[in-house]
Length: 338
Image (cartoon, rainbow, N blue to C red; front, side, top):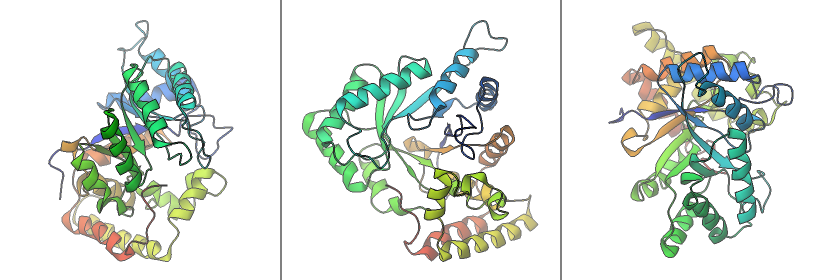
């Protein structure tokens, strides 16, 4: 069923960085290329950017580009963006969310982004060594200090979110406003317990990998997707998440459904259809402030992705085919948290 209100559209920026140091992941390196990306995104009416201290070289390049675009001396109309970032967490390492490290991470991010505050400050991944009271208090302190308007969590389990909310209530602290998580037609494990908890507490859900990281794309099918190669960390991760035989069967089903739907209307690719399913047929709802976050490897992909998102809901039979993917998996798909 289509959302009562369209979800927000946010540009993910992990593809901004050094193409030499991070081949297959970074695609926008120079200031002109980043400026062109952000300008093109803004020209379509969108201004929200999602970045992170864990995205090497992303924040400093964004800061330089935005400084150029917002300058009164710029040859074009000054542009402004809403920026969300995440605390450096040293994924797989403990102790990264102590109060001093949270403060240092945000200070570095603000300096590189060339701004005084961000809109939403996220804890990127759980640090299960540091006490909840310490890292929640530290993030709340940054918000109260004016360095972020609000805060959120990403990749936390339902139990961890519940504990964070309990601590906030107990201490009288400002609770998180947003949960950013892995969600698409394949990854729907959060629907059972996480989403009801978020709705109960007025939290938004921002979905990353809304098209399953390109799992349904033609480039992946042809073995041409750099993102899926095991020569980079993201490729290794996605191969481990989306490699089950049941998923391959589901992919075949979706391709057949897309071909059938395309014969009755304009051409539909599995990749863009997967994106539209998440935006229009999932439990996401713009009425709650929900959003989809996507990243691109080229300006052409940016335009085609926005074109797809703006096309609206899928034909009903295709939407049902995507809904059936999760049922076929029977809970064996990738998890929604780390």
